[in-house]
Length: 325
Image (cartoon, rainbow, N blue to C red):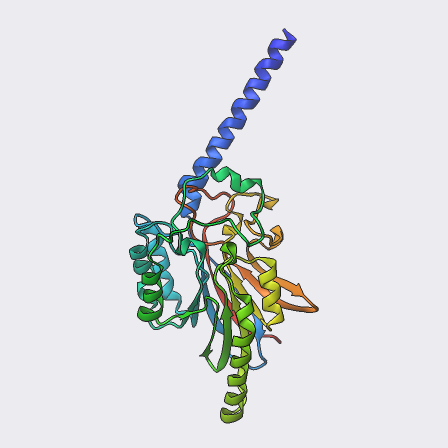
């Protein structure tokens, strides 16, 4: 009788566990992944006396053509009237995802913007056992190896961002934008997750940019200058390099905030080598006796083959940059 009671107890416990797991999966796949959320952060990074500047940070839309609710929510963010938009990649999640991105960003014309690509802006999603994602971080930015054929129309995406919206392409490139009297010298790399970054090119590009900055200061008087680094996947070697190149603020995505988190514990994995504690949100990244503010977006989407978020709502962030003092 004791064994029988114990067996019944174990069965009840297993049934309860299975029910809890099924309920959690249902919540994450049917409800939470569509609970789009706007976070707000204040970043004391501007020089003394500078006027506050707002940055709308978007990342990881993984857009599929049928995701009309996501498209409408992103489009509504234009009502925030940000001073600058930074998009940190993985906008596409389907071979036919570009029209959805175009609809989502249709109201952003005239707002200055910066962008880099993620691997999913080149390669369509692949069917795989997404539970492997939870077994630990992937290799440190030298893989996984993508398919040999780029099957997404990245050129059309670039034309939309650059020509229709006027955004600056920072894939292994540098640029600048002046907002409310503050000059932002900006630089970025293509996705480190597929080893597309060219950190070796940045030094020469940034040296030339600094020469231009000196000429502008000499000719036009002193201007506030802030340096921003932009990358899709926040691998440590890239963040450290950005610190060495003088970044005051670094913006990244890729992690999905962990995507599946445990309340009270946080993300199980980060999908790169960044510490779990910095998988999303605002923090400080320290290297070589310097530091910079790091903001990692939890992103707005998921792979269409892993459509679940748990304790990790999809998000965009409005960053308000203010004076350091």
